[in-house]
Image (cartoon, rainbow, N blue to C red; front, top):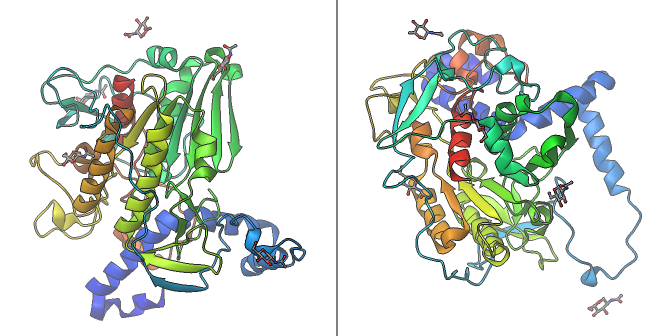
Length: 454
Ligand SMILES: *[C@@H]1O[C@H](CO)[C@@H](O)[C@H](O)[C@H]1NC(C)=O
Ligand SMILES: *[C@@H]1O[C@H](CO)[C@@H](O)[C@H](O)[C@H]1NC(C)=O
Ligand SMILES: *[C@@H]1O[C@H](CO)[C@@H](O)[C@H](O)[C@H]1NC(C)=O
Ligand SMILES: *[C@@H]1O[C@H](CO)[C@@H](O)[C@H](O)[C@H]1NC(C)=O
Ligand SMILES: *[C@@H]1O[C@H](CO)[C@@H](O)[C@H](O)[C@H]1NC(C)=O
């Protein structure tokens, strides 16, 4: 934080660096910091030491007695280190994604002649919000903006209006009927977790309190509704394939290492779900990343761009979908496209300074608005891979509609795990979260789209 002393002379650069740091730490470190704080509650603030002790405990494991070269690859975890790093060799995770016979275009399930993903936001404080923030027991402190002091509540009152048709009205009973006897699982990062929480908030009030329960199991969290014999689950898998970030809580992430040829750690947990909703994007944005192939015995990593790494992971994921989804009516797979960020006000307002902090309305006058946070080459890559899967996957193309919602982020109105300095407090946009979304809010609409397609 000492950098701030110089901010009068180098303000724009320092502010940018600091902002990127904050953005990065919101995305990667929030839960880690929480763990440190929880540890410090018991260990009198001696956080550093408690972590180091954990590491040394691991190191003092008994010596291995089996033949090392026959040993199956050890799973990646936060202690995995690259012995050295070379450039990416060009190796692929799967030889080629098999083309399904249903192939061709990705199913964009839609009402007749209507693209549900293009349209505009309409202020509607009669039908929205679909639930009250304070009535949802599963609400997260990172998303409960009103509770954390957000004074303007209009962000809760917007309805998505597609151009040539209407979005189906949300009906919890009908949604539960679709879920009866089934498992709905969200798989991905904290943005996807937000959508999962939104789904719980949308649905929980129609289940009697004694018929609902939630089992936190860190990586996999399961909400059960007994009276419908149904579950709504969230699996933490920010990079889709196996990686050193797979611990849902403790994932400090300076060096992301992934195993592009190994998805079993996660797929073994999601394979029996009936409806799967995947996402992956923001964790690839701060490249490069490191690959550690499973037959690599000397921990030589290969470095690749975030986009390149994401493509390998998506190919491996697509290979799973292609081989395991035999009947798309029995097993429904959705992929949610990139969730936009609103980090630079100048992108939607000429000469604007700051970011999404203090934005109170959606972008209304620019149908083509597309911010720099939504990477087009990534979108093209995702499109290419999804299109090879034909009707085995449906796209929830939420990017454009969410781009308009510069007003929908928590900004400073959420729980922060790190202590805020007085400099931060004096300049709120420096620590605003312009990535996640307040609830009730934008992810409710993503779920309304999912409802329409089920
Ligand atoms: C371990 O396995 C490798 C390959 O199977 C073999 O060449 C080597 O001799 C084995 N080492 C020991 C100590 O058994
Ligand atoms: C809805 O918004 C209008 C216009 O801002 C306001 O006059 C009205 O009181 C609001 N109604 C409710 C139920 O909040
Ligand atoms: C919601 O769906 C249920 C079951 O399909 C139906 O009986 C009910 O009338 C619907 N409610 C509304 C408000 O449309
Ligand atoms: C509950 O759903 C599971 C599938 O998720 C099914 O195997 C089981 O038979 C169902 N139980 C009842 C009582 O319907
Ligand atoms: C999503 O929609 C945008 C336009 O809003 C389009 O450019 C993009 O290709 C679509 N992505 C996919 C994966 O279909």
